[in-house]
Length: 145
Image 1: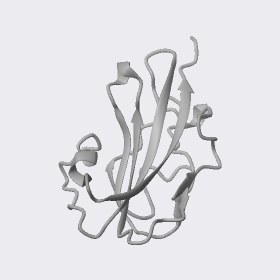
Image 2: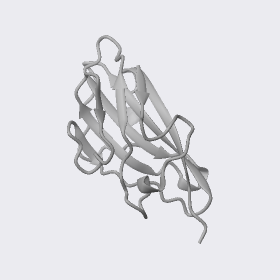
Image 3: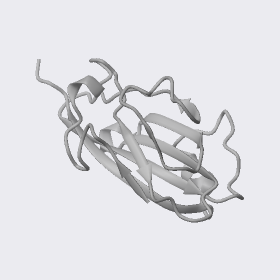
């Protein structure tokens, strides 16, 4: 399974326009080569810096199991799926943080995500039903004042 972006390379810098305090524009994301048996996709974007304590910046579930993409700026109005946490771009209190975007391919018996399921609870909820994952990491640095 592949996850890619035309807006940044894995491990690369997220542009200021993606930051919450700037344009708050979600990055382009494209997925392909899904594993056989995929019935549903879900996507999370989490700040993994220890100070952020796993802050969730985006959580989308119910994405159809076909190759697809979210264009730049799709956050807030994704064309497919349900935004459980609307896109909120990076906004570290200081320095540089890393944001991991993960796409999950789920099997047909994966439990349904309820309205109260958070992105941090999601991995435990679907444990044993994940066929594959693909991730991209973007770095965002708070500009100096």
